[in-house]
Length: 127
Image (cartoon, rainbow, N blue to C red; front, side, top):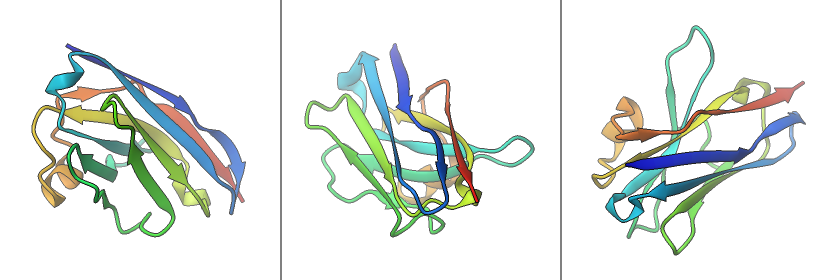
């Protein structure tokens, strides 16, 4: 089993920055793809960014491209999302996700077909 623990987040004014982190524990050697999704109550979950371990090129949703940066540490058990130039529409609960398969490009980002999920962490951007 794998457990995912998110940290960071909080509230910020529009134009500001926040960083959220996700630490994986348990059978982390089985993981090959991690990323972030977000969801606002009443709306569909949206893929934000994903990265395959062994790859240096994350895949981003168009809505965050150029503003968010997804990175991972070399020990393969943490990813973090640097969020810059935040907008009120970025307000959401952000969920860390991890999969035993390597990321499958747009399919993974769109479907959210991941094995493990964190509890979610709120991010609020005020105008």
